[in-house]
Length: 336
Image 1 (cartoon, rainbow, N blue to C red):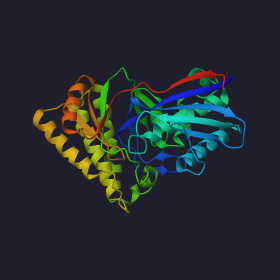
Image 2: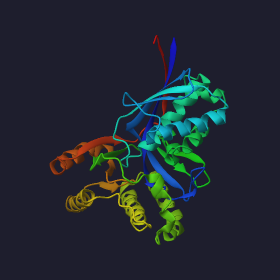
Image 3: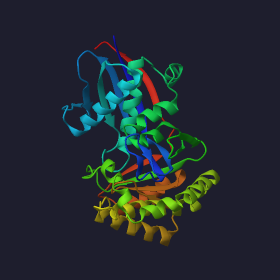
Image 4: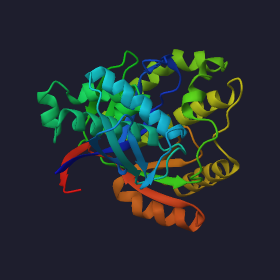
């Protein structure tokens, strides 16, 4: 009987952004970041041990060629993990997303997180988080290993609101029961970015605005923590918008310049701000490294917000999400 080890890891949306690295090899950020774990936007990955001399990789039920960029990233991370565990056996990896990948909704965070969790479980024969802990792999340690594949992956392992410090430590600040917020994602474009976040991160230090950002970011972090602690959206919202626009200003003023926001993104933001101000809507935007817009609101307001968005955004898919509970792990037995 074949054992399949199944991991579900959510994406996350950064409130205090991770942009620029202090150490690229160890994926150590230049500044602390703070994120909200999502619920409906996730990656689900199955891992099982196989005989052979190379991993077998499947994405959305299609087998990946070993020289495909995504397959190379997966294989590189699996090799890193196997070296850490001192295990040489190969894996069959089957993975899929509940949302579009590579377009700025943190699919690398959920993807590399689910890959790490399922691979460790298959190699160590662990059917639960508790089993992994008994073998010396607490959630913090697994998150640190996932970080080596994608920096922001470490933030996806915890419930609610997570702080990732520039020294590498990851902490759950508040769990999902503390404050249920809605994240309504407006999918401006599902297309894969031409320049990956990995490449754009390297350029952060070339922006003349970057040193200014680092000098003031600790004060903004304190304000965001306070707003979450008090569950004060009116205090949090403007900080989210300022943070998103600042990150994109740095991305655009790097050398060479990178442009993630397209004209449709800008048109939508212009409409949303006017709509919000004229109707006093209790909702605020944030944006990761892509063209798609996240609108943060109280959960009870999400249906009303989506109804308004659909009148304006009939051409765009809308993904309703909210504060999530973190990772899930289980085992399936098959006769195949």
